Length: 72
Image 1 (cartoon, rainbow, N blue to C red):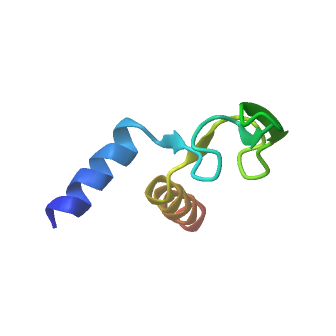
Image 2 (tube, helix red, strand yellow):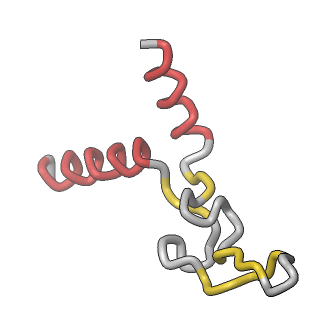
């Protein structure tokens, strides 16, 4: 119960989180022949924006849209 309330508060305070695929870099990290990290292709999940909407916030937005459309 406490976890749910904390996650709901987090979704209200910060609706966007780092992309889970690129860890918030905006691109995939690649290594060159010497082993150094280099930027690779733009992340396909976040399209280089580095942020994604949280799942709880997405569900909240969908619920509010359904409620708004149903009460017109």
